[in-house]
Length: 144
Image (tube, rainbow, N blue to C red):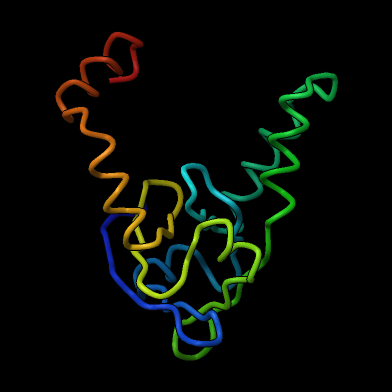
């Protein structure tokens, strides 16, 4: 399970250090793609297969399903960390997430998210809902 929050900088070539514990869980090859909320998602190979399977079950007749699949898969790229534990974040993905220099890498159970530091801070401010209120709302849906 991915968890924790780490701060690292993109280098001039667009490479980003991925924390060792996260690299262990991601495996030697994994997938980076456009995420929601203007961040990037990293998936292990096994988790990516599950995501692909779930998205392939969406009805082709649905314009929303087609649009989401295009969004999600068009930015996907396979990653392999170098000997220093860095990955190259493709330019289109850096643009999608507005990554320039300072980043926040967040473990979110089944995936890793990469945020621009300012975007992560802004998200924290904008999502002012208390954890207790979120838990209560999710409880009403039978999720907690």
